[in-house]
Image (cartoon, rainbow, N blue to C red; front, top):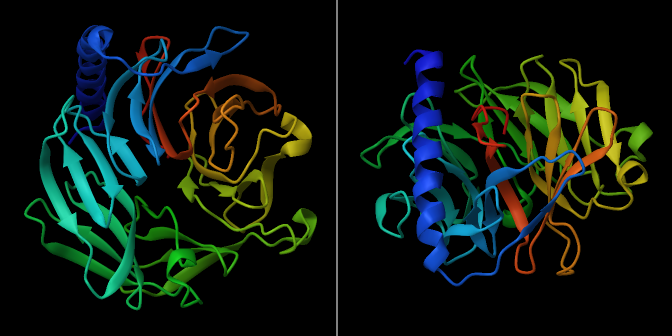
Length: 319
């Protein structure tokens, strides 16, 4: 599909979806969040975690679903795709009706990544004795299988948010390997980005990679979970930019999911923040200034998807 047409469809679907849900949400009793921005930034966003919900630009909860979502995204048609309880699930827009599923292989323990690809397949990653990346077609059948090399048999710590690249390869963060690996479809590793760099203090701060987001520049954005920082690496694995708690007054707390916005700002899901009054998601610019924050007493943000900013749709890429 033509990229411009894809963005147009996404824009219309998301804005119509949020508008209709915003009206319906007036009759729903739910704890509202709170957005803070000196410059007036307002986002609508999907937050995945122990409390999974979609919030409009007024911080009203307009959709929620029970269960612990590890990954998720809002699709161009307004449906919501999430990874919950060993399943990839697609929910019909504005409802809890499941219209598509994929069930984790019984040999494995966890299903993490879930991401809808331009070809209509759904990218998932299974962790366990058979660590692998899969593309699942619309009929729920395996269309592609890539064996992974996580360097650990600790199921939970094998991988996190994998994404497919335009060249057909895949970027996969491996936590205990302290590496983001680029895999070819046959499972061959053709590139490694190391995150236990000396300039970050090596492995002692547990600079484990969680995200692996390809940017238009060709750089890769990586949230380093227990290392409490986000870093941008160039094609050779050198640090092109980073931000840590010395820059944002301690707002990083086990940063998991994230998103690079078209304006160059980075939105970070501070998953480890448990205090109800503390920020759960925040946005930082290239000068490492915090320009937007999202607060909610129940949210623990494992992954996020920013949909609109001040009434305008956000390009659904770069996450």
